[in-house]
Length: 400
Image (cartoon, one colour):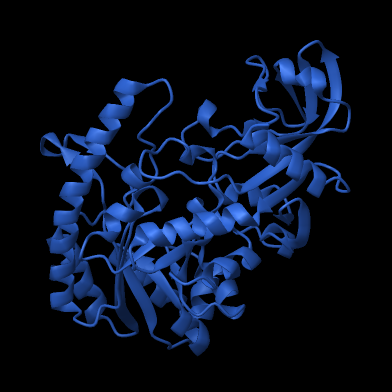
């Protein structure tokens, strides 16, 4: 029996009394992935990216481990909810335009101490000031550095279009803007190198593309390390008491941690290890989050149909954004139908061994987005479900 076949047998036994659709997290795999992130971080604390987890119980589990500290959130409303729930170090990774939430933040000392907001434009500070109403609490601010690799005099750009702050001078100028304004405190810098951390460098069947990605990423890491160090020096000249410099992501933990200028690492997807993180030479994780759909039809030889399953991930549309039929091994989508809203036909010889009501296990392409489809995660240890915990959705929250 292969390791994957053994996992399928365990998951089927653990969920035998649960009807599909059902989502699970394998806690042995989750904990092993957490330990590997800590190892790769080399002693620097890891801030958990909540968008990749979207479950308070599992955020708490990660943060209870040595080597993890703080949360990186994805909306301001989520940040305030987490702070009210007892999380005392929440960095909002994206600028917000939520005026009502800013009014709450500026009026509550506990929230203002716990939450740090993101900025890269003075207009964002103007919006916060306009939203304050009677709140006079100091708002903690982190500046985001654009990490993109620019080549040929800027005519070629590799990396996400995020912050407009690219040069040390631009970031230092924004730092001075924050420092001069009453009601704000500059406490951190963030730089997310998504073109390194979020792009696999070992694409199956594409050796030339994989080599090109590795060459690009090596150049990007080198240039970013130099620029990030210069940015930190420039900002510390304005704000000597800067509390943190955040960088990295699951795919670049060890590389970013090696930079002296970086004080903490961000990671989240590496806890669940969705399918987009299979194509890396720098690490190998264990799939921890899966969902099962039930077989409801057997249309013919080599074909079964499961209920639902059309859960595409965000990003540029493509086959790599679809969930992966994972267990039993050897199933594939019908190219004429793909993953369907209500039903999904699956092809392959393993279909002939599946009966009506059997489970087919899938892996989502991205990590936390799975939790937007399920309100409960069943936690598996060995071949037993030992707990059922709510996702954000299960607690009545869909923040985006």
